[in-house]
Length: 156
View 1 (spheres, rainbow, N blue to C red):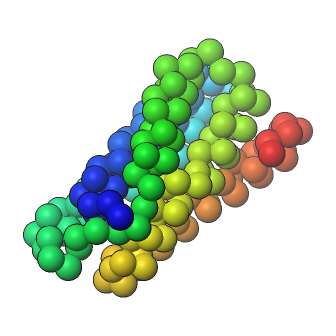
View 2 (cartoon, one colour):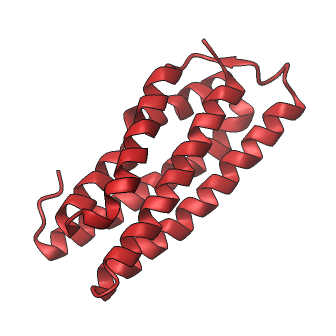
């Protein structure tokens, strides 16, 4: 069991890093208009996801009794955050193929997805908000896979 605030803090870090990575990738591939536009759109949407997680944190802080603990492996989530920090540093040197593969991998992040499911299970009131984040990740993954397909990049 983990305190909900610590889980949401990790999710907030995750969304922040995804935003920063996509922003960096958009800049790194500025000469490729289609790739730059894709990463810029994903960065914009990750910023929106970050706002949703921040809202959840405020909501949980206001009602600590209803939103106390969830069954999540916070260490696994933190390991994904650490991996993302490494990707953020490496983003300017990634090839387009590497960037797409890594982005698809993180959009399917196991720890993040399990965290959202556990929070939704522990608090049905938050389930709808978390479903929105999950749908966003699925759209991002789909957009990345479609981009890879169009470019002939092996993405999985």
